[in-house]
Length: 122
Image 1 (cartoon, rainbow, N blue to C red):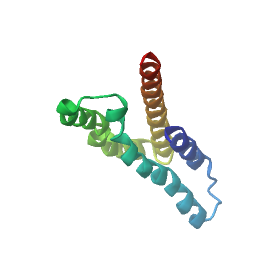
Image 2: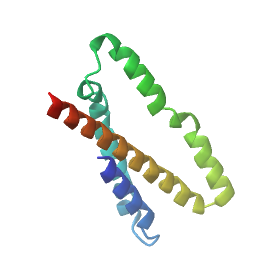
Image 3: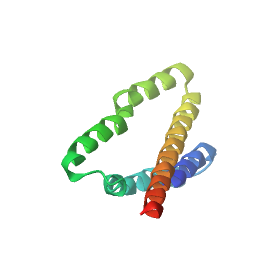
């Protein structure tokens, strides 16, 4: 799903200014729609990693702090980029979001690989 989000976000950067606003509006909702599907999946990772129930709350709390950390500064950073760079700031914003998608994809890959190794050992 992270790879799909990254591809859709990259696609947003390629939308020409001559395209209809209806198309642009609908297309820009695609990365957000895929992102929303990840919310349910994000809490299943604890079970995939076999985190004991006794520490599940702590693990979710720590992962939430890390996962939601960009929300503390991201909007201010985006506004700063738009103030400084104008429309070019959007390239920085979408590039940043693509990098986050790549990081999410890599983290998912690591979890999947770890889970596969553990299952092979069992």
